[in-house]
Structure formats: C-alpha cells, structure tokens
Image (cartoon, rainbow, N blue to C red):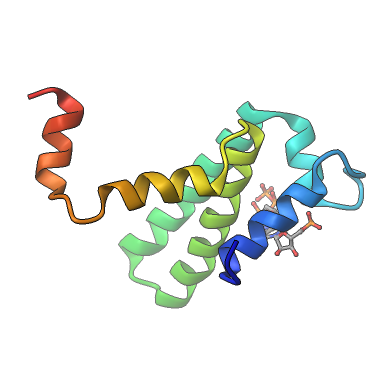
Length: 107
Ligand SMILES: N=c1c2ncn([C@@H]3O[C@H](COP(=O)(O)OP(=O)(O)OP(=O)(O)O)[C@@H](O)[C@H]3O)c2ncn1[C@@H]1O[C@H](COP(=O)(O)O)[C@@H](O)[C@H]1O
C-alpha cells in the first residue's frame, strides 16, 4: 500500500463495509449490492462524458473524481481489489496497445 490518494480511498471504502448505511454513503451503496453500484458507476461515467464533450474543465475534474470513487465502489462490491486492477495495468506496461487488443481478440 502506498500513500496515493486512490490507495487511501480504497482503504476507507474497505473500512465502511458492514457499517451503518445511515452514516456512510459507501456503506449504503455496498449494502445495496453490486448491481446498484454498477448502475451508479454508469451514471457517473455518463456525467463525466457529458462534461468531456462540453469541454468544461472544472466540471470534468469533479465528475472524474466521482467516477474514480464509484469505480472503486463497484470493484469492492464484487470483491475485486484496486490492487487486482493495478496489477493488470502493470502487466500491460511496455506492451503495445494494438498488440494487447489483438491478443484479447485471439487474432
Ligand atoms: N469520494 C467520495 C464521493 N464522491 C461522491 N460521493 C457521494 O456519492 C453520492 C452520489 O453523488 P450524486 O451527485 O449522484 O448524488 P445523489 O445523492 O446520488 O443524487 P442523484 O443525482 O443520484 O439523485 C453523493 O452522496 C456524494 O456525496 C462520495 N462519497 C464518498 N467519497 C469518499 O468516501 C469517503 C467515505 O465516505 P462515507 O462512506 O460517506 O463516509 C469520503 O471521505 C470520501 O473520501
């Protein structure tokens, strides 16, 4: 674990698991289940897309933060860790995105 804000946010999300849903948005969303977390992530992603298309920089920064938070929430709800995703990114380092796409498609 590093002192990166994403690591700290992940640690906070994990501490909220099973706590009072009235006191924590994270606890409330986790209690609502992975489908609801995925739906919320989708909504936040669309809001970020809208701001990217509009070109509103500060709104995109704010929506981007919402996207990252709700992405971590969606992972946590499915028992996938941030480290799992970071390990996959690390595995791809140094490979060509085009080669990677072909490998995934089996071509
Ligand atoms: N980064 C966030 C974060 N980003 C967004 N949100 C919440 O996500 C919710 C959804 O945002 P919306 O704008 O969609 O608001 P909404 O209430 O769903 O309204 P609708 O538009 O859906 O009707 C809001 O309640 C925001 O406060 C967050 N809630 C928590 N965190 C982090 O998680 C930590 C723990 O929070 P709690 O679990 O609430 O203690 C916080 O200290 C933050 O670091």
